[in-house]
Amino acid sequence: MEYTVIFHEAEEGGYWVDVPVLPGCYSQGETIEEAMKNVEEAIEVHLEGMKEEHLKVPKDSGFVVGRVAVPV
Image (cartoon, rainbow, N blue to C red; front, side, top):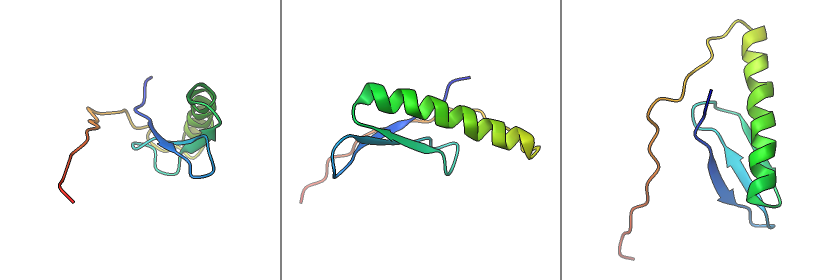
């Protein structure tokens, strides 16, 4: 299963990543590659917990990420 993840630059350096369709599921890493590996593990653990609690595992549904420029 694939999930959309969003990478954010951390103020202290590195990146933090969240998974919009899985509230509370996030991770971090010093590089994009490390953050991606870590968030994959976080998703696996998050989904295992949902299954143990007999919660429906959500599917990523057409999530779109974009940027909007506004004059300041």
